Length: 103
Image (cartoon, rainbow, N blue to C red; front, side):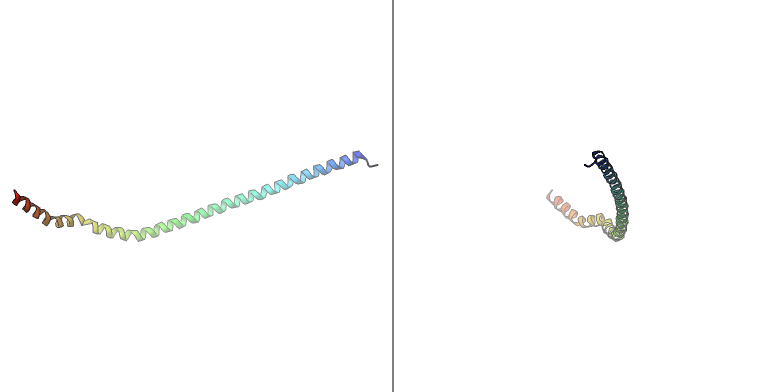
């Protein structure tokens, strides 16, 4: 007849051994996840730096392309009031003549 005490002791040791192995496996998995998280953080930071550098480059390129257009528009708009006044003078004179002759 098997010894019940020995069987229970062996079962206890097995249960404790399985618990220790499970705990160790959980620690290993935690470390793996922590490493993955740290690597992901570095990857995100690197991508953010790359995106920022690209945006700064695009902003510089856009500035170089837009600046000549702004200067052209400013050159054309700068004399616009003067041209409008010159264009309106004959019309104003005609209206004065019409108003003067009607009175």
